[in-house]
Length: 464
Image (cartoon, rainbow, N blue to C red; front, side):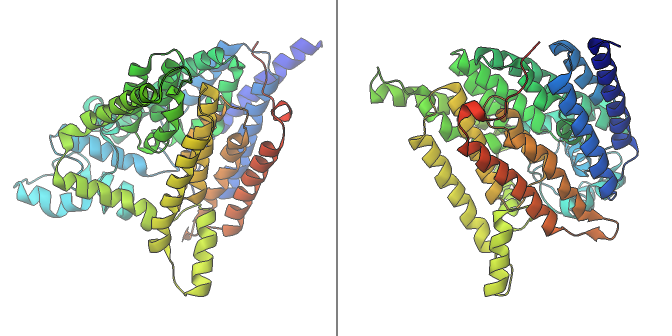
């Protein structure tokens, strides 16, 4: 058997093993089966790595394989996350003409139906959706921005009264967003003269397939607009780039954090400081204007209060898979005897803002690759100081890293899955040794990359 045929058989075996693994992930695996989850995920990650690094398939064959893997999840109910129940809830509430930011699901059951004199639930399957999302989610106001709410409403419009049909519609939207990322990511890589196969560290990554397509998280939709915006900005079409960046903020708020990094993108030595500032101001004005336009239908005093209160919970109440914060929390218990999240949760964001401003003002962000590298560093630093880092958050540094020389987010996308060890048969309990191992590996690899000359960092495969 010659080498070419052997490689084809090897690639086919990797695909078949991946199909079996993804099917089991989507249709049989329970969140509490951590060892089984970790074993399967490790196998899928290995298969993806081999397909990207060693297969002779061309770009579009690999793209088709990635789409096929996603379609395996199409008729499945997410089994690693409950968030989608809230997505369906918000979409159905909005479709009925109610503002999803003004009522929590619990308030809906206690007050809203009674106040309206309804003898039956205003939305279909209200009890099932409330039970599915859990007490924590049901007790808080929605914090999903308007464009995200629009997508939830699309699911409510086309899926009828079925929870499974709603999940399928949401999943189709997320798959389409990933295809858009593949398209614009390839174009941006070509303009940056980087290997186009780099994009498969996102598109074929089992982390992305499971967390976004499988668990129905909308980071991919946000990232579509971010990458599309960066591509247009690279082409000099700054107006539409600003509009798309504003839309991305209205899917997930995260891009607001790295807006300052765009400041030096418009700086040119040959023109005056005043003109440089004017260019930056126009870009920022369009971004903020787009965001405000999408929020306008919902704006009210109650909305601002409720939305801000829910966002604040992520800094002052919630804790999950943190790194630096857990060390500070331990110091707090040892010195004052209680959890100091209420204080630390206010200080850490200020440190993050300071670091981002430093990166924006004192680091070169003039070229597109410098800008994207700055965003990767800023977002990664933000997550290192966050009190809550859910696995799907890593999608942002992972995707943007394919346009840079840094690969530590790829490593992070593998080791972050140890955070699922917190979900056991006896309830929620984090294994802090595994959390420490996760960040030891990620930070250690990042330090190694920072110290290595660019010519010696991990090289990705060239396109065929």
